[in-house]
Every structure is written in C-alpha cells, then in structure tokens.
Length: 168
Image (tube, rainbow, N blue to C red):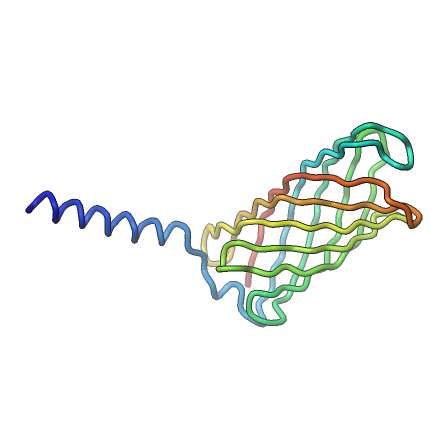
C-alpha cells in the first residue's frame, strides 16, 4: 500500500515537473506583443546549381528580425540578414514573412527575401520555442529554402537554424 502511494506520488510529480519544463509562457504570443530575434543557420545545398553548375555548397548566415503579433499566435516579421556561401561574396538580404505558433511551443514559418538584384528566396521552416524565462527564448528550426535567380530556379537547400528570441 505504501509502495502504491509512493509510485502514484512519484508519477504525479513527474507529470507536473514535465509539464512545467515543456510549457512556454502563452502570454508571449498574444496580439499586440513584439518579438526581436537573432538567428544563425547552417545550410547545405545539394544537387547541381542551375547558374554556375556547382554540385553542392554550404551557407552560413546571421539574420536579425522584428515581429508583431497581429492576432494571438500569428506574428508578421521583417528580417535583415547577411550570408556567405561557399566561393561567393557575402550578401545582405531583406525579407518579410509570417510565423504561426501551434500549442505555444511549436511554430511554422514562411519568409520571402531578396538577397541580391534578380535573386529571391522563399523559405519554409518548422521550429520549437524553449522559453528560458518570461521574455527570452531559444528557437531551433529546420528550414527549406527555394532560390530563384533572374526568374529561373537556382537551388534548393535544407538546413538548421538556431535562434534567440526576445518577447515583450
């Protein structure tokens, strides 16, 4: 009987602690809130690139973004980025997009950016928000980018981003 009570208490405590660890502050995603973020990515492009014939490249970037929650869980974003691809000069990009939060911790994101003249990128991603406190979060994300150059398909890339978000 004592063992059953201890097991039940241990199970209940484990559920409560797990819920506390994996629950974010839903108030951070309410209408009218603002987000400022910084994100770095590590991407690898495979397949033959349409423009220069390269078989594969790697890309690293740093993005700074700001967002505003127009309704609960839906943030519109603006982004400024800098990226450096293998054997190419670095480039500055400007972009806009949206992020939708599902169950307060999982999000889906779509971005459109213009890294250079005659070049555009559509990015899709899925990520997770881990709140460190009421305002600061770590945000890992898996991304897929589709690039176009001068109206023609250029490359597709798959990668991982790690972001830092500040919500207020």
